[in-house]
Length: 347
Image 1: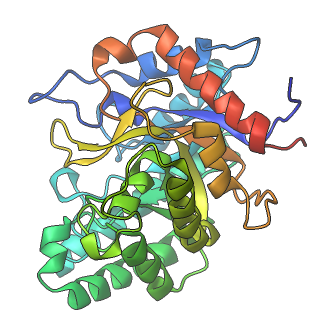
Image 2 (image 1 turned 180 degrees about the vertical axis):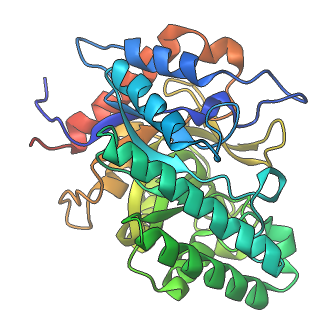
């Protein structure tokens, strides 16, 4: 058995909310997500923490300091720590497009500021030793494509302002690469946008399910890496594609989501189609999770980057029937442990 205790293993709370709602399935409350995370166990090892979505019904972005202190107590009471926080930057829930109107962009930055304030309280309460604030561009690729140069210029400007605000709180921002967000919907546009922002406290949040779709050029055919006639049984070509993509994005990666994908897109509720998350043992899963996580966790020489102190499982838009089974979380934890056994370290 490995003696590695880093990176810490986190579950994600947001699968209880993302893709749920009146036009999908009921949301799953934060209390339930905390409870199922806390009791998951594989051979005596459990999750160390949980990453949070700052959005009702889980956490009100306008929560008072006392509310967040109470949340910190609840998390600690489950023997968990808090990690990365998802800022609710989207127009329909109080934010705004990062390439939208002046008011939109102001709202985007305000939501980041509120997220940093919550993160600061959690740190002061001693339950958040590490983690970032997660953002995206809050705009779809089609809208961005109407005027890519101007769209990217505005996204960069908005992200710079958000970075400057976050720096006041000692926070780093991580842009999650998903094919459904304009200006970051391919590995090339993601790299180019991050370079243009040119702030020391911005980086990339790599999700194994979402980034797999980068290889296929969904929403960005010109940036496809895998050949048009690629077949999933060709492991050598897949590995070469992963190596090319991670060589570009790994230096930016400051937050990491372990996940599985079947090579397709999926959306539910109000969430646009993006890389479909699958359970780690899904027979249609295209990734060797523990092996392929190494492309992100190790550099080109095979050395551990140690660029972040925790990793998180992301499994959005699973059916509630699956999410409410404890064995689901035990299986996910087992996959996380295998990643740490292969690519972790001890402190």
